[in-house]
Structures are given as C-alpha cells and as structure tokens.
Length: 183
Length: 183
DNA sequence: CTCCTATTTGTCCGATCGACCAAAAACGGT
DNA sequence: ACCGTTTTTGGTCGATCGGACAAATAGGAG
Image (cartoon, rainbow over all chains, first blue to last red; front, side, top):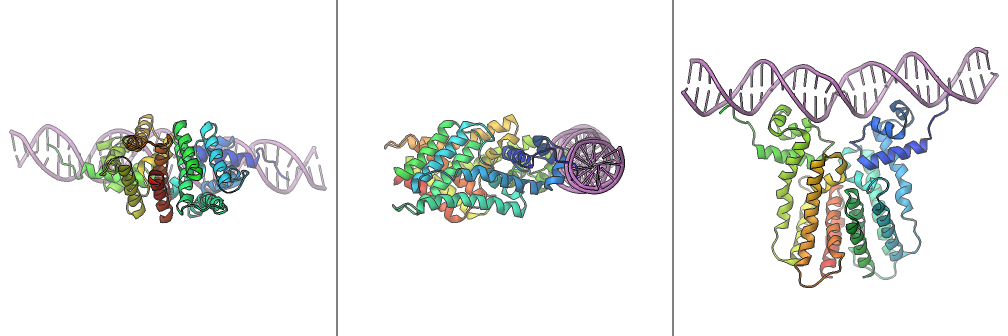
C-alpha cells in the first residue's frame, strides 16, 4: 500500500555505516550520509530518524563485520591467534574503510549521546571479553595480564591501521601477539 | 607600541591544545576554542589565524607533553620500561584530558589538512622510533617484531585511556609490556 | 480509471559554522 | 594633552548544520 521504497534499507544502513566508518560521527553531516547512500536527506530522516539514531543503526550494521571475526575455528589460544591473524589480514589489505568503526568511535566517545556511548563501550567490552574467554578455556594457565595485553594488541592493530601505518608495523604487532601466546 | 595584549599567548595555546585534546578537531568550533581560552574569536583569529593553523599550534604546544615522557633516566630496555610506566601513570590518574592528542588526531586523520596530517604522522613516528632506538641500544638482541609490539602496547595504552578503560586494563597492558621486555 | 496511502522531492527553518572587518578601546611616544 | 599603533569588541558575511514540512509522485485497492 502506498508508494514503494526506492531503496534497500539494509543497503542504506551499510552505506551510512561505511561513511561513519570512514570519517567518524561529527565530520559526517546528514547530507554526507544521504549522499553516500544515494538518497535525499528527507528520505533518510523519514526512514531512520535523527543523526544519532542513524549512528546507532550503523553500529548494528557493523555488528556482522566484527562478530564475524569471532567465528573462527579452533579453541583456546589457537582460536584467539586465528582471530588476531584474521583481523590483521583484514586491516592490512587496505580495501574498505581503514581501521575499526568501534575503536574509532571510542576515540571520539564524548561526541556521542549517552545511548550511543553505552552501545560503543559495550562493543569494545565484547572484544575484550572474547579475548579473555579464549584464554580461560585454554588448559594451560596464563599470567593475569595476558588477556588484556592481547586485547591491547588488538586495539593497537585497529588503531595503527586507522592512521595508515606501514604493513610492517601491523605484521609486527600480530607477531607480538603470537609470541605472547606461543613464545 | 599600541594596545597591549590582554592574554598570554602561550597560555592560550595551551588552552586551545587542551580543547582539541579533549574533543578532537572537528567537534571543536572556533567559538569553543575561544571560549576555552577566555578570549573572543576575533582575538584568536587575529593572533593565530585559521582553525587548521590553530591545530598546528596546538600540536606544537603538545610537544612538551609527549617528549617529556621520553626524558626518563636509564638506558635501553630499562629506559623503555620506565617510559611505559610513566605513560601508564599519566593516563591512569584521570586528571587532564584523556588519552593522547596525537593518537586521537591520528584516528581522525582524514579530517585534517595535508600539512597537519604530516605533522600528526610525524609525531606518531617519533614515538615508534623512540621505542625502536631504546631496543637498538640494548646489548641483548630481540626478536624483530618486539619494537613494534611495544609500540603497539603504547598505542593501546593511549587508546584505552581515551575511552575511559578500567584501571585494570591499563595496568595489564603495562604489565604485558614488562613481560615482553623482561619476561 | 480513480482513490488512498506511503515515499520522494524540493524547500525552508533557526542555529551555528569558519572567517572577517569596522569601530571602540588602551597603551607608548612626543 | 594628543597622536599613532595595536588589540579588543561586536557584528556581519555566505555557507552549512540538523531537522522538518508541504507538495509532487508512484504504486495497490476498489
């Protein structure tokens, strides 16, 4: 009933996500987002609401990207190492927006609404817990700081990729994680 | 000759630096910066020029902050470890802007002018080289990835502090660096 | 073919953006 | 006391911000 939508809502959400991913929250205007999605600002607003709500939807549209990296084979340290390797390979290729939407958003955390702030920090914590749980399920025990150290190297990988660090740097950070897990 | 300035230029530069440090480049308007410095936008513009030039001056005003962390006693790994400990202690206290102006600016690198982009990346590289040189001057050799791994943990420390990570996380990242250097 | 409904489109709002400027104000030199 | 010089002040510029609206448009239902 009524005029049908001329666009695919999920595709628009991905375009908006990629725009936020590329240039962050504040630097993107509503018109930038609409332009990136190939529709008018009126359509964006009618379908998705305000800018901060759009960012919330962008976070949701980003979930498949960063939870898919959790879904690797193996268990314990092996699974963790494969996760780090997968992250490295993704950010090192240079196609798509650089770095990680979540970590970049965490760096401009004060610019967000309370609701989005919680949503961002919750996702950061999900990464941290994924790392900790992989070490917990491993039979051999580890020094208490190891989990957050590996988590830190994940943050480093995503932060360095964001500013366009040399491939060597990214590789070395990955290798550092390997040394900590197996060295 | 002429009417004297009512403000201290260096103090204004520090106030502007702190404003950029707190909320980044794009999120701060000229009026925000003027307000933070306690002067009018006209005075800001007359004395320091455009917004991107103001950011360049903020980078200069930040140099004492992050080069002072280089100036610790000891040599080699000991000096590097003390550097990491000093960084940890600084970002863990919670007073002053969170995280690091340079690393935060590197995360919104695309929002800056070419000149400021180079200035930001140069400073990131200075940190990386400081780490590498401390390991180079150490008699015992290290795996080739160690320097960038420690550099990555420095990035992680500053990134985690920026979003307000729990003190435990910051401590564990520091302890991870210690384990890599001495473990 | 005509009506009903939902979307698209173009436009407009008040506010704010970065930047700039003329006028008022505050000093030192004479 | 007056003048030349510099800064401060308050206002203005065109552009753009996030957000909203009425009118035009494009389908399905009857």
